[in-house]
Length: 260
Image (cartoon, rainbow, N blue to C red; front, side, top):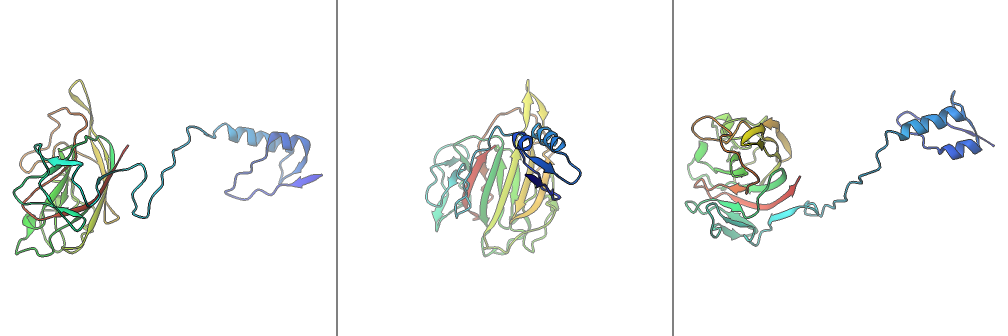
């Protein structure tokens, strides 16, 4: 019996050497021995282990290996930014800043993460504009801020608007929705590495704002400062995530994290 093998562009032909040995093969210019040799050579670059673990994604979009930090009901994963109870208000599946009450931070510490956060600036700006309108922030390792701000038709300095790495990188585009509408950040963060107290590798971050890429693997220059230059003056390890109180009633919901 003769089998005619017709390779198609973009498709790998899997034929065992044993099968080829017992059958006559007529390919497009390929003998059975040549095709068997190609199969053996191709197998040398096939990696079958380790097998990636299976991650299921529910209808709510949360991966099965993620840690839910806020599910709309409890602040059990959070505490005040200086310790003690988290004092933010919970209503309608969201937690909201209590202006003047301080920020909140996770009880757990994190290094490299995939972080999903949904947030909403107040529907009524109350005559505020610029940095006073819907201001908050997400601090990675309590030091490196991805800015939260109502940047919908609200001019301010570019490296301080929504989705900026505060005072370091303006977002590539302004993907902001109107005040009162829910928005999302998906953040991929690589923590800095220190060796013997000195910086060995700076932090880096990628941010998607409402599904739009706005920060692409940018190198964080150090702590995000309001006044002064950023620096890595303090070596540190894993640390909590912090949500900022900046005197605006910004709300958060559906927060989850995957450790990388």
